[in-house]
Image 1 (cartoon, helix red, strand yellow):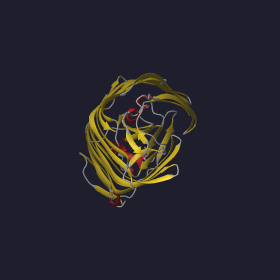
Image 2 (cartoon, helix red, strand yellow):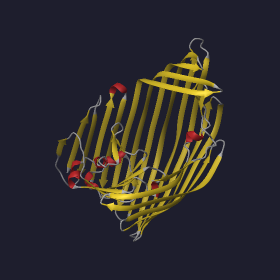
Image 3 (tube, one colour):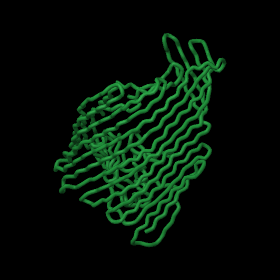
Length: 482
């Protein structure tokens, strides 16, 4: 069988998609043009912790790839700008194919006929609870021998907008090889920016109303090479080499009206900034069936890269030329990160027991030159997560009971924070009738601060206003009941 599909969409430019799948054993060709694919023939089974979708024959035949099936789920939607699937409730969505993390382009390379069912978790299982707000797992059957490839480009030439992607996927027996490339380019030479700061300081009222025009842009590229070997009911192995290439810039000039109580001044300014990095990442995954009831999974991800960031800004009084502030910052940060995970599942007659351990460590070395002078400092983020979870069903009553221990160890330039937190989770559900259920959920979890929150870097934003992190900040805790 040979299948080729093309669609065209105009957005001040062109949007094009093509995909071809070739099997080694069947010859012949068929080409057809379509405008849009909307698949609605789906069946849903609702459980306490997830919804399971299956699709009928007609729906599978009408879809171009697995992504067309996902976009019809009521909980998911297509972002037309990024051309990616997102959750209607917001937050981070983690996509899996047979339990292995997958990219948007990888999902496109899955033929609809290979999709057995889709599992949608609006409350992620303990294994992924610290990584995503929603988990979507696509379960597939063994693929045919052959290859799939496709590409699409969307652009708006008058605003410097280009999104492009290409992928190729080859399957032979139990082995699969994948190659992916994506590009997101923005280049706006007439972006209008308005910033307003209104504040009280030392008993006086200040207000800064800025209007700037800048040349703004960024280029993000991703290249991925993937090898997967899947032996049904035995083991799965995947090795993925991924590289993110990113650069951005902003060069702007403008004016502001600065007010101190009832006195007004006209200011002029320029603000330039930029950053770049190249992140190579190696991702190794191995899952092994042990007997009929046990499965053991190991996942290791490592990366090492350097980020360069610069910012130059100046503001002065137009009449006198007197400087209001002069900001000059350069930062070179070297980062090494490693993530390791060990997970085990066991099937009992009454349900499934999942247990595991996850460790994430990032070490960042900074060379900084800013308003406070030159400095060198290091920051280390370490998070450990132990968990166990049991899910089962008794007649119409379903449940998921989980308990975990999270350790956050952050060492900033000024402070070291170390704390262990008990993180329980309870999900109780009762099936009222088909596709309807009553559910209660409760959870308690810590959230580690991001790197900028702990940074001692100082950046001038406006007259009298500077931005800096808090090296003494520890972490937040969330308790949720639904």
